[in-house]
Image (cartoon, rainbow, N blue to C red; front, side, top):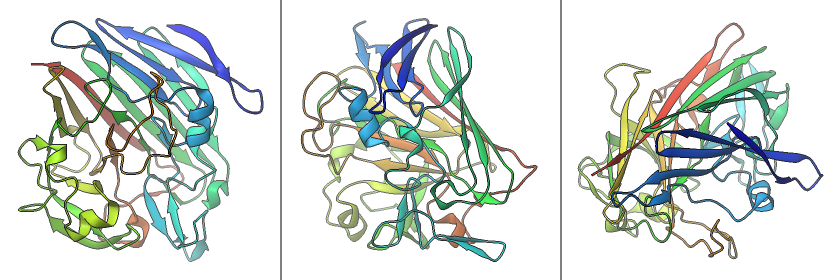
Length: 343
């Protein structure tokens, strides 16, 4: 395992990059937010491509706080805070009462994580989130282990708390199996028959809407670009894909395939498996002007696809959704695997 100085945060704190390698695959992970800056994979012609849409430099990652990094305490959206055991917690929220990814400006992705263990093929990072962090109850200790094999990367999440809280963890990786450019020609297949329909603020209404005969029907492979600009009401709300798909499971918590993304140009297929009940598919609908990628080019709308394995957004206020409640003495465990296959 190679450890190098990646740069320094705005306050001067050093950030290190950890390079893991297994067979023909390598990955680079920062201790800043567990950010994955690269997953290098040989394509069908043997040329190495970075499967991750990275940013130009450390300053860009720190400013974003949500790019290719770990997300907590609650991935995706909540509104109006949460109530636990009769006590209300208002959380860090925007002018519409919405809390996204724990609250902008307080992201776990912009924090330095402690290195617990490191080897040539594995890295474990830890973050202690104090009671009241982002407005949430309880002190939470979260650990994420990245383990690289010769066919992909596995992320194992673990979290405990000293008081009742809600928690929803993910990694907000932006994928592009061509290495750069638009992802619209890439083929997506999802193991999902429904989505959690949302209101105008992208808060789930509680309805599980069938994907059949809609822009969300990826039960068979089709290009991302086929319906990304659909005027269907749910698509118009987000300006593309930014929805939680309800994954089909043989049993709750089973580690099963959730998504397959394929690129005809590179000949690479990404298969995502997860224990999580949902996956947020985001087609990079909103990109800050002037945001530069790792190769120096400006990142454009639709240049990446995020596949965020997760529990459902707004679960604490939707009793019919899988619970995100964590109590003292319990352990949150979650696994997501990214496998890269060649045609």
